[in-house]
Amino acid sequence: MLAGGGPLTEDNNIAFIIRPILSPATLHLETEVQFTPIAFFKLTGGLAGGLGWPLHFVNLEGLALNDRDDITNTKRSGWAGFYFVGGIVQFDLAALVPGEWNHVVFSANIKARYMQYSRAGALDAWYWGGDRGQNFNGWEYRGSYAIGYQPPWRVDFIGFVAEHWFWLSKDIRELAPMSAAYKADDSSSALPEVEAWGSDFQSWRFGPVVNLSFENGHSLAFLPQFRNGLYYTEETVYARWFRRYDATGDKYVKLERLAILYGWNF
Image (cartoon, rainbow, N blue to C red; front, top):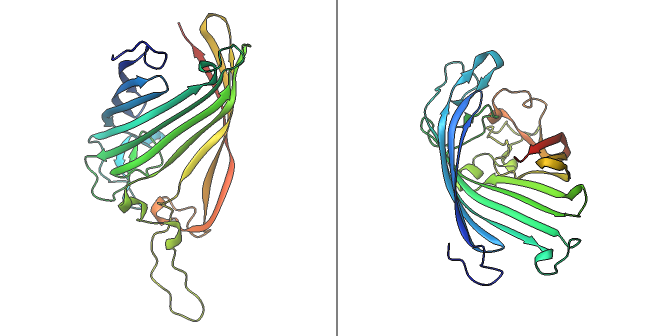
């Protein structure tokens, strides 16, 4: 689409992507449009929606409100919708300096996504797909970034990847910021407690990645991943409902997991 004669526009195109996804607790459909007006940039947009159900024998909620300490009789089922716009910037040094040893690559995928659960009111938290139940109806930012080197070896990518997430909607971000904890001292009466679980916290997951490529389209990637987080007070850290948490103001970075990804293109 709108292809030109130069190296920056000769591969211009528009792609339509549809992905039906079934998990043990959800069924949803994802759609996406990717428009490439110039070689190093894509405009993206899409919508998704689906249903969820509980798996009580493993204490999993596919789609449900998480609005109180005891959610035995909480609202479940309904419809979850997700709508996003974004962009992808991608660069390969070999496009400017040709050569099989010159593939220094960079990619940034950024998007603003609106989330909406049909049975949730303003500032009601909800579960989706067995997650931690910290979703709200509102806008969020999601970014993924990668930088690396692609040598002409069996090890064909060595680099670093990161994921970034935080709330864009002001009312959610200001709901329970880390600085909102009220403390009582010995010389005054106790002040009323407010939520301070960190609604303004910016979450990162990051780490190095190595990809091995084999014959017949097989590949194997290794990703040790770290993440940041907040420490909570001893009195609140074991609460079932995250809105009872009280952040201390201290942060941590720790190893979260070692991910091993097998791929097969056929």
